[in-house]
Image (cartoon, rainbow over all chains, first blue to last red):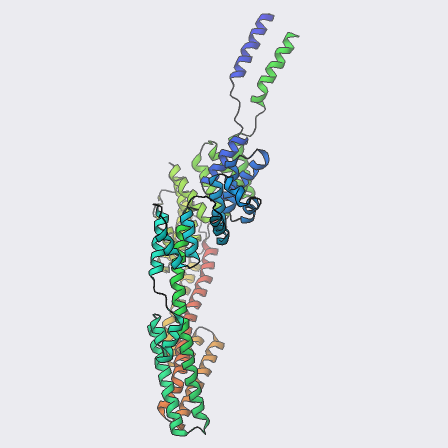
Length: 277
Length: 286
């Protein structure tokens, strides 16, 4: 009888040992897989929670730490990511993995801290897409000549981003910026011509008509009524105000033209640079 | 003694299998509970977890994730998950749900044409509830696109679908009649021309009394000054001195009255839109 009972126990024991132990979906390994899934499906807020949970319960490896930093950036919680890098000077940063360095650069660029990136480049930090970032900083600072010269004096990496940024720098370099002083000067000589020079033909024509007609009107008033009466002085004041406004308007028109043009190049640069951030 | 050792061994070996952690079904149940409680952020995370760790009914779970994002007003992400739910599902009913969800998200993002395109995929073998929502969304989209007659027909279809008429069709008729009248009454072109003939009258038409009187007095005053200058000096003196000002304020007033009329129509349309929502809003969006 005892032998029978023993045999039954052994059978049960054996069966029990074959029972698959249930997978714990909250353990570190699964949580990491899940956090990565959330990140890859662009659910950055949820991914951040999961990575933070991981950082509390499990030992974060370098890859996970980096992923957490990326989610901070994606969720625009820059200060949290900054905290990590603040403790590292460039020498320590240089010793870190390339992905960390790339993340540092992206973090700074996302916050428009171009000066920090420039500093990193000047100190010789090695990171991916260095050419692209250097060129983009020049473009974002509207240094068209510098940007163009940079593309002429360096080897352009053969990738879409570098090629497109190079194309932007060439176009920006070749673009004709309007000179506000020239627009003002032209408006002094021929009223409205400063606006026409800046491409605002309709405005220029109206300006010309009003300034010339008010000038003529003032001239006629003085001729007819003399300088003793108030009326010619009002007409003269009107003419002077039109004329001055036309000079000021000419310079402003040139500035507006340049701003629109520059904005277009900057917008294109941002679109290309941040496309894979 | 030997038996007690055996018992100890069995218990020790079985314990990991018996003392189980949360399994995927528990996670789904927890997510469902959070969804019911309105904790959509937490619910979406748990649905995602269940999805990732291989829960069954992936299409339903994906739909639920989309619903969570829709409730959180993250319409872009919700739209992505509705798309996924559509692809994962083989059931017409679920596919329709995904289409309706996506169309709703697009309406909320003011992408009305895209919403209309989305709704073209709707299978008309759906339940009456789904059909009602389909017509509601179509009605809303057409209304947003200023296709008022199409919008009206869609809203009428909602009433036709109900066995117990849920809203008074006469109220709907009168609302659309009002919309038609607004377009005639506050015609921007008419306001523009009126202001051209009698300065300020276009503004008065739209009910902007203060603006209208202001424009009337200002432009009228300028004309009076011009007449005085003509009388004292000459026509050309008056024209050169005052034409720019008159042109500036008269034309400006005309443009302004046109804008006011258009804004008035928009305001009135918005009031009608709210009334239509109150009248036809499906239960799920309440």
